[in-house]
Image (tube, rainbow, N blue to C red; front, side, top):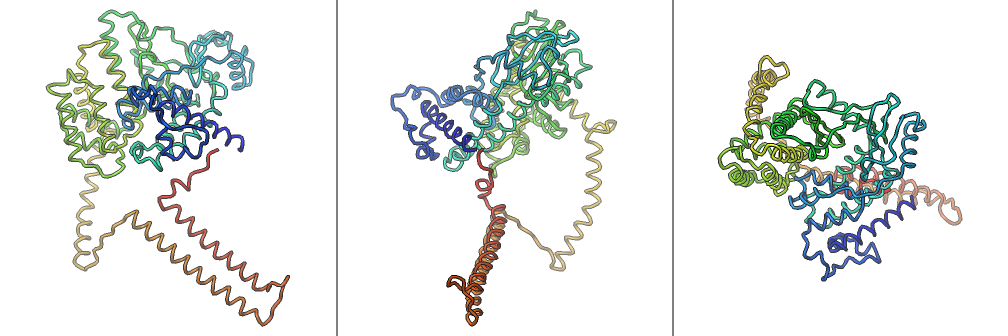
Length: 565
């Protein structure tokens, strides 16, 4: 543990030095790191070149210099347009893994350790040179013992330990910034790092990615316009993933005529609708590098490390939101966004609606044919940041996937009326929710809820009127601040009372045993025992009350966190 602490301290010093080099030293100094890291110069250089570079670009370059963990952090943040301004999102989207491939000997060791068998017993062929290398893993082409061509994704050795150390430092930095730098409070650094920690742990577990692939394969098995690779379960473990090899060019290099492009664009749009509104499971990173084109043309999806899941309620909300945007109903858009998100404080809905009205007036002047979805989503999410409304992760992933798909569709079929195609689809889905013939639809649920409300409402109103007439009607108001004050006063009263009892007990002990002194090394024995018992009882009462108080007061976030390892 001591060795890990020194490693964390050295890593923190390295991070501080790189951050200062990119112009963020002043912020680190304000977070109190200037005094805790002697020897690290955080003073900004007035002649530094970064003075002429935007903060967003400097932030991207800093993450790139800090290594794989921070590059992956930037890539995760690039999916959260609700947490960072659009300038930062645009810069972080440019981050790419730039790491050398690890040796074939290490690959062999990783694979054999994962399955407990020699490599040649698992695969009949295994290409030593990787097809691609990234910060978390690299991919190799191979053949199974049955002769099937596969792609083997192997986790980078030592990446778990490196991530542990960097995450430990990141959590410390996030708490420091959130505690002393007021400007970063709106972006909740601790919440961002906790979400990154969860996302990166899921990405490091290839069994989770394999489960995602299986779910996609089951959903699309009867859809001929989309190809999902098969998972080889017997050759898949936590650090090794084996998938069917799809021999097809990527979308960016595929040779298609105009008719093929239009057909492919329609297939992409239809598959996106099916994933979102029928399956509730969608690909979270559909950039051109993850899309392959088979003859037909048929689309093939790869890389399922980032997926999104939406519930039936979220689907209904999304349909309502799209219809509200199409109808330029700013009041409904504001209400739906407020309900979708998690506001940090009470938002001014009137001002929020007025800002949304201005955005819709800008991007929807006449019809949906010429909608700039990228700019529309960007500005709406910027409003969420402005009003401190945190959009749930699934919606944020969906917004990024939607922008990526919109860009692909525009490149394949520039005149494709996306909005006009989607509106009838959304209206049909909304109508299906209330189709009496659909037992899973919302009509019967709505009728049952209305019936229950109609039956209970007269009884509840009668009870209220009777309570008012008899003077028994009471209104209970709850407040976390009032409860905290009440708990603190109760604790103060208990500690004060315990202190007075302790003083009385000590004095009474000496008086009671003064007539029969039994001394040990000149100290009254019974008096000493009385003092010890009093201290024990008093300390027990104080500690118990204090522990219960810490669970309710706002200091929990600091005092209740586990120490860095």
